[in-house]
Length: 314
Image 1 (cartoon, rainbow, N blue to C red):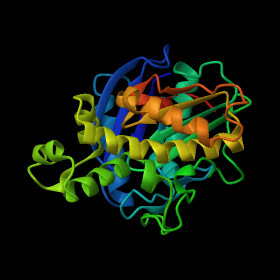
Image 2: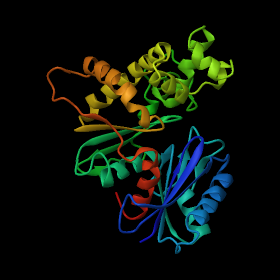
Image 3: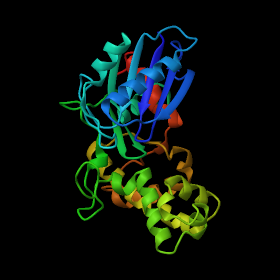
Image 4: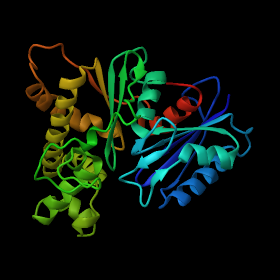
């Protein structure tokens, strides 16, 4: 069974074709910028599918992970980080246009499916997979299966409010966790620090313009020993730990997996997250120590999980 998996992010779309006999063996990979509008998204996905299957046989199924509220029919009701996309029957449109069975789910759910099938939580029945990029999403594994909720909307902790006076969020609220702990939030903290006269080396690397500094610039500088970049990373890590502690208090997972755009630099921030988490979670010194680990499948996890979804993973 040849499956196509596509991970739609706020800035890029990553697609993979998976070997039918190995859930994490990628036969082909391609990425393109995320377009605006529902029609643009559908056309981009169809073009990506065609590119991925060049030289291969037609796919048996297509899976797509998108950021936002996706119901159990594959309709995207709302995608805060997708421009001009809402109330889109994406699964039905893809199936109609491609002639191939198509399934659509939340992108973080797809990350969780990938890590459960071939990554950090193989064989784990209770786990939480949290993804950090433009926003924050989560896939919740309970009793060995994804928890989707009554409407399919479970797993949106990025929009739990952790600071009533915090920055505005594209969802329309203020102080959402993803505005303080996503990859985009790390970049914003760095921009603010640079505008206040700190992060001189990072600012110089950005040509003197704080507005172009991104989260990756902070982790790169911190890895090279830049103390000011390390301070910004520490600030961000505190908000990350706060949200994780809230989720663990509610869900009590056996493992927490962190994935998304900053996963390759997890060694830089996991110790700080661990230290802050221990002081924030209920009865931190009396409960079993919780493993908080980096995703094993890296940046391809969402696309791989979408292919697992297409192949019948639940």
